[in-house]
Length: 98
Image 1 (tube, rainbow, N blue to C red):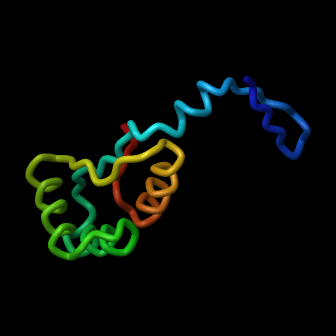
Image 2: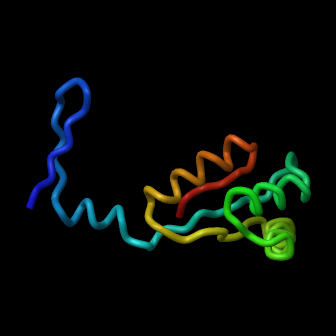
């Protein structure tokens, strides 16, 4: 089965069902990286505001990032994580999708 997506310029892009489903699988991770720019308070604020972590959970993640250099903060489909990646990057955090 092929799925056709058309954009506003009427170009058509075709995907197989397997390609669409692969993008929806919960096999991606949002990684928060340590940097020399953001404060603990800012990281905690962003994790509680955008990812709905408690203050205690967010503080634990911030310490993990500080001591280990990175921490997985969310798991989901690439499409879902891309939204959160963009939000956190706009807040100045260093994040990537694995």
